[in-house]
Length: 152
Image (cartoon, rainbow, N blue to C red; front, side, top):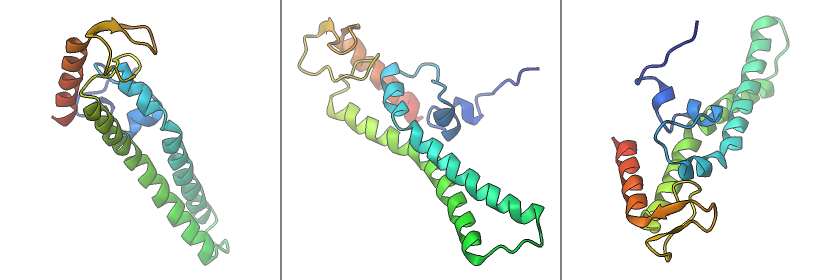
């Protein structure tokens, strides 16, 4: 049986750590943003690795209750878990902020397919980076529509 997600689940949120780490592009999100966001996926994976290390150390304490676990190992376990969780939770938001700054600085003139800045090009042209045809007014309208969806 396949699990069905609802709109209230983290899977629907374009900036949820779950979606970001698993690499699933949200429906309606421009590919230009998604490619930008994928550059930092390794940071989220590192956060998961840290959290996992903390969890494994904690599991050892549960499995072997009489084991001699020093104070240093306890602190390492706690800090690995906290740092990993923090990295996984914060990275998508930071990437969103960084991209939106780039979007506003370009005047909403970024290629929808690759995120290349289109400012300075004719209103109807091909993207020099990926070769996608575009009309500047349509590109700007699409980015503004997407931004409204993100902030709702």
